[in-house]
Image (cartoon, rainbow, N blue to C red; front, side, top):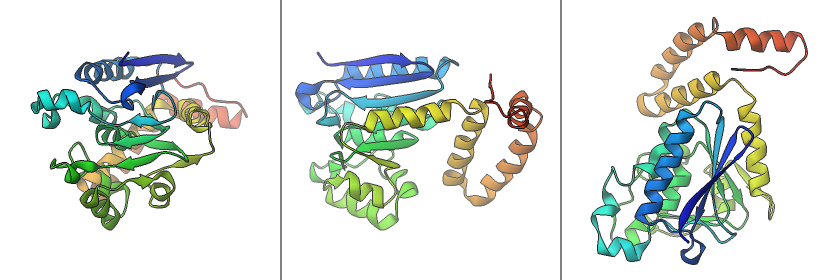
Length: 253
């Protein structure tokens, strides 16, 4: 059955794209369900990190279900209908794509939208829009060049070819290349490390980095000094410094 599964692992939420018969392709109902799950996670302060992955070991997601897409072309490029694929970019809650296989089209957009990408050695990425007459949307043009060199981004989008996890790692698109069967384990380890830190600081780091992409270095520098000065007087700063001096793990609210 094609659906979105979610389960908690302590302060982490694991979201699984489950449609193995179609390489975890998204139906419209699945896209809506993904949006609901992400909104619920963002509203829950007990969720410190979200991990997204695909069912099985063949695909993270092949993108939209093309048979469904052919019957309703408006779904392909409708910003509102495709918003869940891009939602990780704007979430305060950190997100990690655990890419267990092929991440193509909408699956590539979703992985690209996450803050980090942990990949199985057998994973691969593709932005096939040019090959099927569709403009690469959802951050493929706007976000990809902020993560990898311009030339690599252009070549990937213009050719529509598959890029192996190893090549993506060399160009900085992938944060960690995992041994066979270890991608989720590695993703959880990173998620737990992030979850143990101050959620306010982690959220501010993301805001600052996104500001750097959108408005440049000067804007990010202003953000650092203004936000850094403000956050020095917050409870997390007191707890963090006290925990360091007392040689214990901090307990952030």
